[in-house]
Length: 159
Image 1 (cartoon, rainbow, N blue to C red):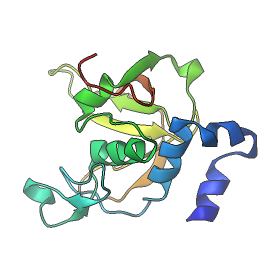
Image 2 (cartoon, rainbow, N blue to C red):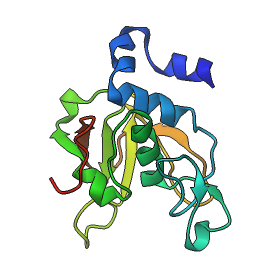
Image 3 (tube, one colour):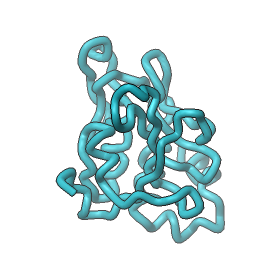
Image 4 (cartoon, rainbow, N blue to C red):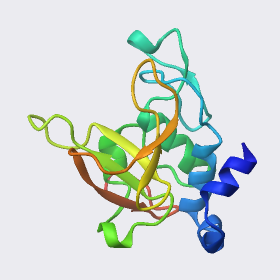
């Protein structure tokens, strides 16, 4: 997996590898192939989920991002809603590897339903859905909501 991680982080992004986002991204990339588990995973890595995820050890989307940022020294919360408030909102032109990428697939309820980490300005790493595995997919989707940059030590959900 180290070769894959090295190939995904461009040589020109050596500085990004030293940032919290770069550390989080490497942690998430190391989990590629881990099963999706609804409610699964967290700061300690893959875990058994709840409901239809109870029999699968793995990650749901926010469990993967929570784990990745815990590896970088930031506690960003457990849910997509907490993570949406765990840093500074940024525009796409400021997007860096490891920034959080949010999607809003249910317009009837406010806030994001899915979170991923930016690999670059075109790709994300995420735990997509039941029956899938942590993987890399295109960043652009119709339900793209926005981007958040996590500041280490500032991930408290009360902001």
